[in-house]
Image 1: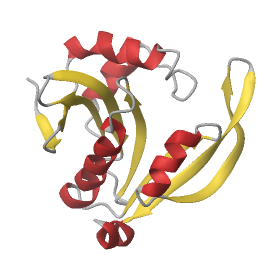
Image 2 (image 1 turned 60 degrees about the horizontal axis):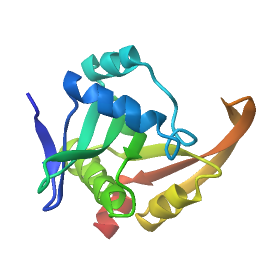
Image 3 (image 1 turned 180 degrees about the vertical axis):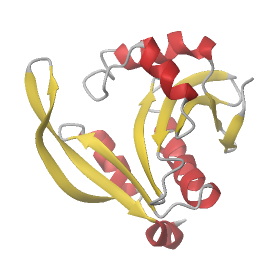
Amino acid sequence: MKESFIQSDRIALRTTVESDLDYVLEAEQDPENSPYVAQWSRTQHQEAMKDSDILHLVIEDRMEKRAVGYIIIAGVESTHKSMEFRRIVVTDKGKDYGRQALQLVKKLAFEKHKIHRLWLDVREHNHRAQELYLSEGFIKEGLLRECVLYKGKYESIWIMSMLEEEYLKIR
């Protein structure tokens, strides 16, 4: 069943189902996305979909009834009330789907799950994503230097977060 977790007037975040996995894998491996996200196998995605601590969600255009991206959020059951916005991949770029999905993730995290902290990591060279996160109220906490090996080269990642009180001020 395709359960909608949360929606806006334009998009919905719904539970990923098995029939979505070809799309998810293609989106992740697309040359426009692969430099910015970890590459998972079908089995890794299936395991995440079964994990009660993880939300594996498809971003769907509500009017066109088609997938335009996907999201993975971990820490649903965190005793520390801290969720990790582990991944967002948008396949239909330049149409504001990423911003709208991020706004729904914040609402889902802070309003539905009542968490205290939402955090993410973003590759140092992914300036477009960093600008989006900063414009949506995330704060850069620090740089993890050369901690990701991608195509034989080490890359650094920024840790960014938003606290509940910060969300409440800007929502």
